[in-house]
Length: 372
Image (cartoon, rainbow, N blue to C red; front, side, top):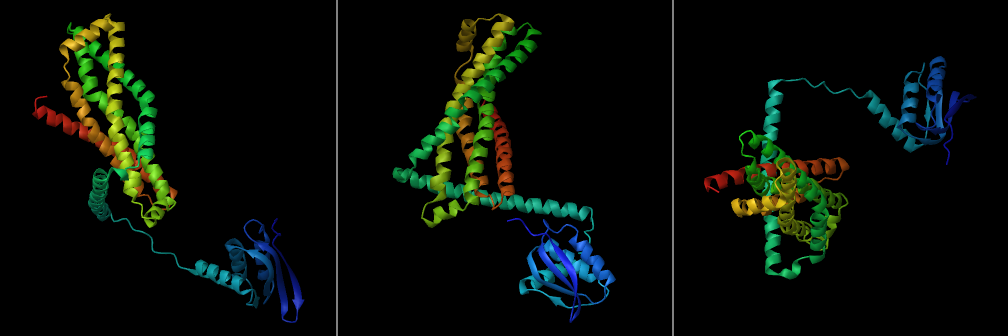
């Protein structure tokens, strides 16, 4: 329905001059009616405002009427519906409200307060993380005791989404990582006349570090963000509350299948990443050193044992658990607005990547102490 244009007319009645307002006094149809009403009230004494014929009125129209009445030459009567009177009183009180005191910068005190708030937030976050881990372990224990509680359909679907669908990007990325590592190895070792040792350098770099780290980082970008967005959307739509009302544990239905899916697929993806990285290194060795793939493979079998492969693979379950845990926990912390969802999805990716680098460094220190 097209809104009626806001308008008024001045009439002489038994109570004196009366401004008869009509139409819809809204932001869409107000135009200059408020300014013309203010000019009328400035030049006319004791004008009565009759608002009984107004259709719709929002805060913009009420503000125009209040400002016009405040600039009038004399106080007149007001005729209006009760709902319109309440709106005018609300707008009038807002106009007359005194502004709050300006915020003063306190320099060092602000810095100390922000540091203190950050420390408190870190403690609360650590405590909530422990609660999340406890709930997850409890759900996992119930599933181990009674395997019928495992939801196989979402588990298989999540394995496909996190594993099979990620194969192309993982293989392509690690292939080029292997190529880059091969370029570096060949360029550096050629200065010492030891170019043939590029095979061992590529193998150790791919199998021990780059294969698992690059795969985990890619899954952090794909799966951690997806988990946080999916669970966060359900949290916003109160679907998780509905599940709890129905007696369904959200950790069994949502968190545990995602944990299990990543624990299954990440080692498999690491294996594919290792193969792709070695192929990339072999291609570079063949093109720059004229080392045939057969020679590359034979030297790999003779000089590189299975230890680097198992070292790299041993990191996969820990990284999988961390990626799934961070993604699901951030999803559970989503509030009721879209801004919170965006913040939690971003936090899931950032925290997951940071944790992957930290875990890799911790494993490096552990294996160094073990002389592996």
